[in-house]
Length: 191
Image 1 (cartoon, one colour):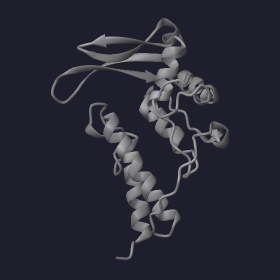
Image 2 (cartoon, helix red, strand yellow):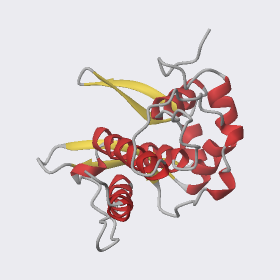
Image 3 (cartoon, one colour):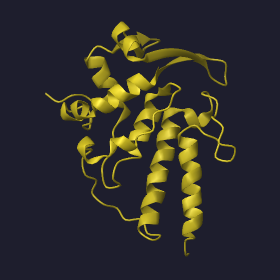
Image 4 (tube, one colour):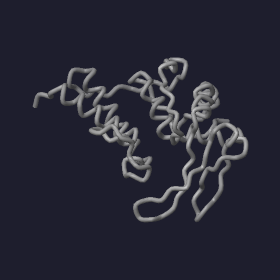
C-alpha cells in the first residue's frame, strides 16, 4: 500500500489539534473535561503525531531509531508560543516537545512536576488514597493556579494550570530540571 503523504500530513495536523485540546475543524478550544484533554489520551495523541511526523520525514516509512536524551540546549525555545490563558502541565510539556528534534527523547510531565514539588512550588497531598500535587503559596506567586473541574460523570476533580509567568519559569529552568536528573526513567532526581 502506497501512502498518500498529503493525507498523512493532514491527519497529523488533526491529531496535533486534538492533543492540544482544539477542535480540528472549527479550531475552537475543547472543554477541559473532554476526553482528549485527559492526560493519557493527550500523550497518546502526541505519540501518534510523532510517528506520523517520522513517516512524513522518511517519505512514508517508519524507521525505529535509538532516541537521544532530552537536551534543552538543543531546542530553540525562542519558538515557544506562550498562551495567555493558563494551561495544564501536559499541554505545556507537549508544546515544549513539539520543538525538540525528532530523534530526541521527550520531556516528561513528571520531570516538571517533581522538580516543582522538590523546589517548594507544589506540595504532595494524599486524597482518597491518591497523591495529588497542589500549589504552595510560592507556586501561587509564580502563577500556578488550582482549578476545580467536573467531568462528564459529574465527579469533581482538581487540576493545576500554569499562567504565562509560570510557563516562562519552566522554560527558564529546563536545564536545571533535566540536569538534576528529573527526566530520567523514574521521573525523580538521581542521587
